[in-house]
Length: 276
Image 1 (tube, rainbow, N blue to C red):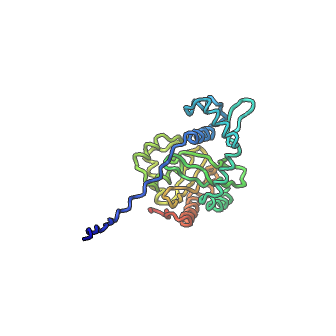
Image 2 (tube, one colour; image 1 turned 90 degrees about the horizontal axis):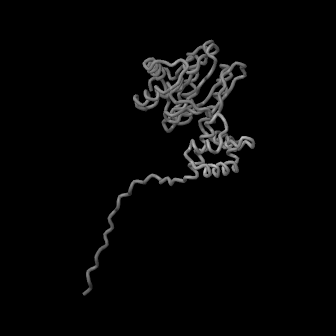
Image 3 (cartoon, rainbow, N blue to C red; image 1 turned 90 degrees about the vertical axis):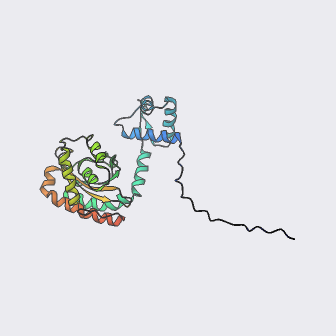
């Protein structure tokens, strides 16, 4: 008599949630990036010992990193002083990134038109949380009287007109915003209560104005662009106060807002209009 055959049962195992990819630390790469960031922030070239002290590195390790970066043309050493600064290879990488950057490519034609219309410097800025804004697109007018800004310039995310836009249209906790506001440096600092009133006005109008508070004699008008990931970028007109007032702050603000709405839609982000 044959033995009974056991029927194999297969239970359906629920799919496990995908785990986030593990990021394996690469100390040499991390240190190299830290060196590049330090040199990028520095106003002047730095020696090996100064770099090592700032980053907590052994000087010999720091020197090896610098030699590799120099070989890749990312840093360069002055033969006389033996101090290091960023080199042309890093600039070339940055330019390549900007050419492929969707936001900067989309806003550039708008910036060119705005610069010629208002005779001012016009920039596209990208937010990095509440840490800082970075200039990723730029247009200058032919006017001999204009404010100088460079691609790659960074400033605190909550400063000036752009900061009012970030506070108005982001979802960061009020307490965190106020803590960072207290650390900002202005030529003519606004009181916190007045600043919050201006933030509410920016949310209502769709643009914000800084009339000589961040930099005395300079007026800055900004309108927010909502990116698909929810972050806030901005279109910004930066000009001599008398020149911008002559055109009219409201006129500039409304023009910026209309363009920012179009750009938000073209990029697939949420449209920021009025009390949205």
